[in-house]
Image 1 (cartoon, rainbow, N blue to C red):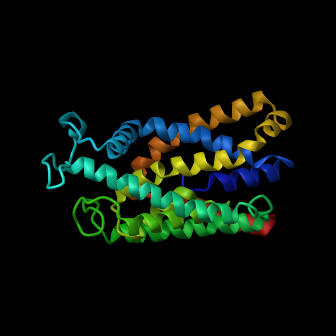
Image 2: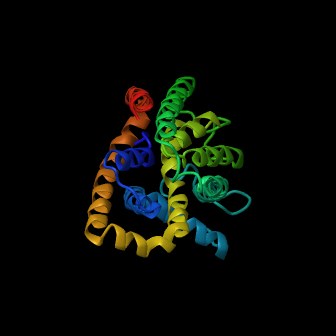
Length: 274
């Protein structure tokens, strides 16, 4: 949900007075929710993977690959509308992930030492982003497609904005999904596509974060233990899948702003009492 899971993890560690918790533990919990994302969007991801391999082997999609295409007719380049849209989405994911990676590496050294009050301020910033996204989506019809009004997919410019906002979302207290959805709407992506792309683009970002912290895997096993780690991951997966299914319905109805009513009091309480 767009309330910053990393921020809540940091607050929980503070309340339980948990010291010396490796950052990789948080990443492992994110991997569990990443699995929920992959399962939820499995059909979309499978089509993107098919388009990705066809891109390298220069194969055209068959009819069965384009059953839900915007246009099944081939254009001058021999590609159907759905295949072109999938390839454009892949390029957008690469661009957004690269920009997020640059920001994430630059800020990774400061995240573990970030004061709780700064995290609480991030909750308020997330609430403001959700309010902005609500104002933006009210100006556009939910039936309109991205940017120029036709179903052309997410452009390189839009992907850059989303990647930048996802980079901001790596900071504890700032919601990754909330910031990327706001960035997508800000750049002209339609509401339903903004929500879907926000979660699909999280897959390479979270997996890359795991690879960067994988060197501490032994430390996590020794300092936390296998059973607590397993319990945390199972709980993250189950709650993550349920939350994602509910959240996608809220995105389509344009009700993400509801979460600001939770985040603003939480952030203010944290600033006052922590």
